[in-house]
Length: 93
Image (cartoon, rainbow, N blue to C red; front, side, top):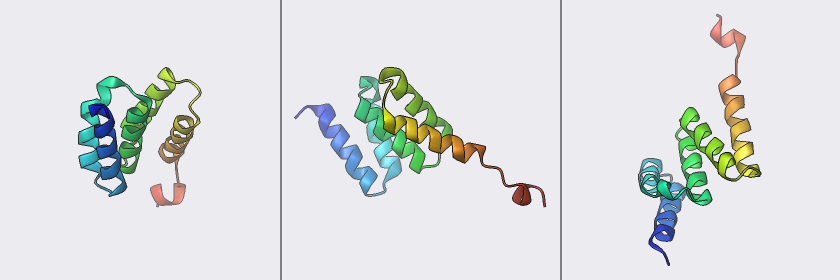
């Protein structure tokens, strides 16, 4: 097993245990590889941390490298829906 594969497994395990900051720290060291799975996990971590802009940028980067990725496209749509949400009664009392 390659070292970068072990980092990915460690980051996925931290993600599944809801240790987002730890998972993000592990994955940040591996991001230079621009592996699809490493980038995707980073995007999911940022999404779960509600860091919408960073998450969206990560998924956009995935689409730049892998143009037809349906998961990245779905996340981008979800993030845009979150950012575009407007409830006039809540914001204009």
